[in-house]
Amino acid sequence: MADFTLKCFVESGNAYKAALMLQLCEASWEAEWVDFFNGATRQDAYREENVMGEVPVLVDHTQNDLTLSQSGAILLHLSDRFGKFVPDNRSDELEMMRWMFFDNHKLTSYVATYRFMSKFMKKEGEPETEFLKARAMGALKVLETHLSTHDWAAAGQATLADISMCGYLFWPDHFGVTWDDYPAINAWLKRIQELPHWASPEALLPASA
Ligand SMILES: N[C@@H](CCC(=O)N[C@@H](CS)C(=O)NCC(=O)O)C(=O)O
Picture (cartoon, rainbow, N blue to C red):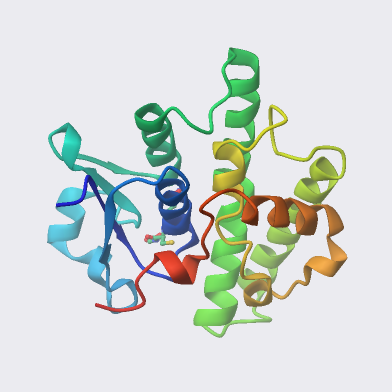
């Protein structure tokens, strides 16, 4: 049995954050596909394991099947386990966490929900979707500004903040942008792709059972 099970599906950038971290750390892990689009996360059994009803969920079999949701908590747990992608001093660590919170509140949250509403629900142009789009584009502008003077989100090195923020950004066409318009994000994504063992969402996550 693998050391970790990741409950996931390929369209989930939040799951990709966890999968990418497992991959970069060369962990022993297996993916368990969640039938999200047919309501699997709304079932009682799923909610008993994760009351938030969200993907991803990580099970750490080396720690009495410790079960975690929230990609940020999962990333922090994996960094504890592998000693990677966290700076070694508190001020840099806080800077890393500042960008992780920004990601969870402003970047991934709006990019992912805008993508969901426009690409999967086909509700482009509706007021709620336009609101999400404006928020997503605002967050991307913040990231572009930051990365125009920084190679990495925090601490001058690849950290959990980079792994978190890139979760959805290898699918720019899914939310109507081209990275040609965001040169700093473009260069940063290339730096991430050059990390040893990097792999795409499609290479790491299952598309169906
Ligand atoms: N902040 C959470 C977000 C997780 C999330 O929203 N996952 C989506 C799939 S990518 C989900 O399960 N959504 C179900 C819902 O919002 O009810 C994380 O970082 O793990």
